[in-house]
Image (cartoon, rainbow, N blue to C red):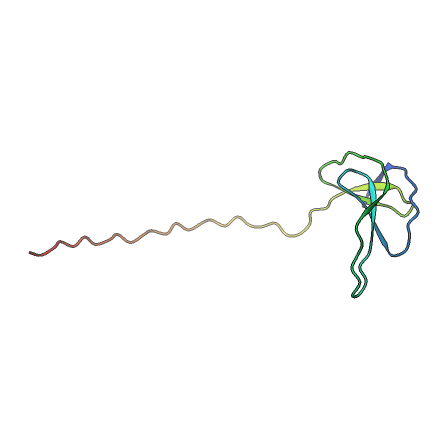
Length: 98
């Protein structure tokens, strides 16, 4: 996985918190849910404002900086299946008897 640093921030990570790049391109953190306890609401840790490129995964690396990696689209390709044309049976026309 080839990664490249997008922004040097140097965020110190606290244990029990999840750090991520939010929709605005800033670093946010939220308390992780453990057992019966619910997680916490996210709060901004650092304002960076990076612009995202389509097809890349953005994450906080071990140094606390924002890095990105090209997303790998794996799996097996679906085969194109020819659709069968179903012919409808013609309705019989019955004449009314007098």
